[in-house]
Image (tube, rainbow, N blue to C red; front, side):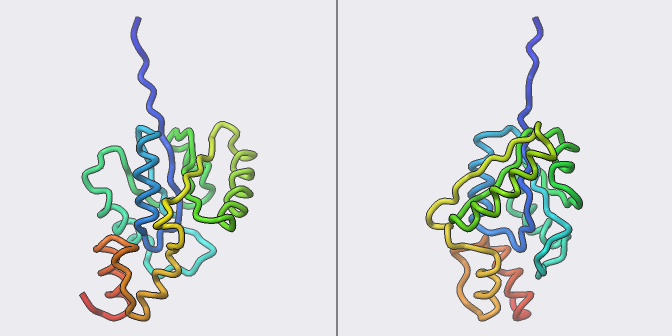
Length: 167
């Protein structure tokens, strides 16, 4: 009898403006659970983004180069429809604090109603990343603060280029 190989695909959606070490931690831990991860960089957001959609994708792609089971691509519209397009069985979401949980819980319930076949998997951020947010990192970078512990080197350089025309 022929054995059927099942590939477990998950989507990791977000604005990623910019990608942080916390995002990468969640991605790496999700890779232990799923065979393939599609990083969905949202084109629409209720946030004012610093980086263009293309820049956000490229910053993330730079960090996952060499990982054959990770794809970074932009999407618009409903996250669950994007996930369906790839045959994903789950959405990956990172949690830092209780305030994240309330928002993420509501979002997960809405997504479950829209797509009962797609699960939401919450991964707690490691404690050293629990206070990191893209907004705080951008604020610190704009004031020439040291952000090297919070973002990959290429992101650090991109932030300083945006704010200070250095690097």
